[in-house]
Image: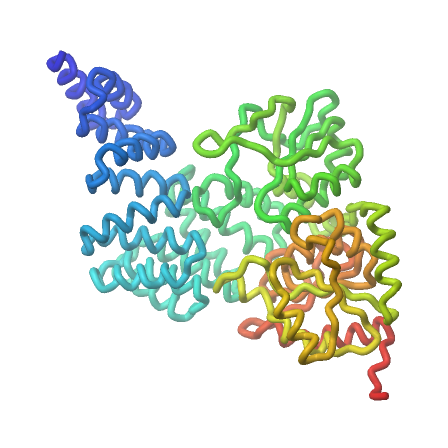
Length: 542
């Protein structure tokens, strides 16, 4: 029997050397069936799966080997590489830390730790790992590119450009560094220059590779900034091809084709949510357009949105999004013939500025809840009711640039003749108390309304308000989606401006844009003055 196994292994290794990975995997699998406890054979089989880019199965096999042989560094490497490819960065980091604890001079593992930490938003860790790699190989171009990527995450743009430039000086063919210079230009508001560099990278990259696809996805945002919507949405479609967690997600799989925009009389189209709640609400703004082409539609959304969307679109079947976890990522349902991620609606219905001008508020609030909140608001002392949200519930070094602290809103919160309604979800009790103590202003809220989970109630409350002021959070999509006029503080280079001075994602939005290098809070006094004029608020001292 051992002779037969040896022959299978020899044939498998020959196939592997000839890069016939399919045959190699089949032969290693047969050999392993004869000798399932052979460690070396188990590693070779898992490596053959990795070579086939079946990262889910390679991760599964390497992890099973790890359970049997927890101290084998080769298995740690296999696990970390497979989990990185799957975008499961916490699992990858666990094994990478094992590797560097045993071998602190493992340069690639430090760099992979940097990438994993950055992908999870752990920016301090990311920078630490990048510096560890720099100490090991200060003349290695990949190390300088790695450091530049970490510096980008903490918004040290000039330092990042220096690192990327150094990588190119050491290796003129380093397309990672070149494309990262383009990304930096994009972040500092120079989209035309970014696109020129991205285009050069595309010309030097084989079509169909993951790097090529990722380049197009990154380019899409600068195409939007330049007002080139049609090509931008085409490139945006490549966002599911990369396993980077910062691209489009979840990366679901389907046995049915992706909808191409055709009219469907009898077949059923599934439209499924992607990314965050705010993105979801923006993309669902095109659902009425879909109904002009498709009779039978199923929408899978955030569970909190189910009653809201079902009321707003009574002829559409609405249900919570559900799919199997990795590696399958498939749907348990089989009641649809076509599928489409929500963001891809834009490619079919929002290819020009004029298309966006057709967007309407579409959320229908709960009439009973709305009446309850109207009565509650009527019991407050002032004429004008304004909702406020100053930050996200998820904070990080990168995300904080788009948010404010509640103290920044003093010019607004001190306005006379206004009742302010708290729309800030999460634990903000201390912030609310500080506003009352320092500004003498009450941020009204009701203990029976869960601002995070009861979206039916939140939409009903917002629909009763005269105005909402916010930063770029889900509230900035919720308020205009239900038709309430909204003022939003936004970074000047936000891609959703599409190269014009308006902000057309929804009607009833007034954007307040910061200049490059300036803080969002600098626009709050202008917003306060606008509210005074709009509502004719008397600010004279009595």
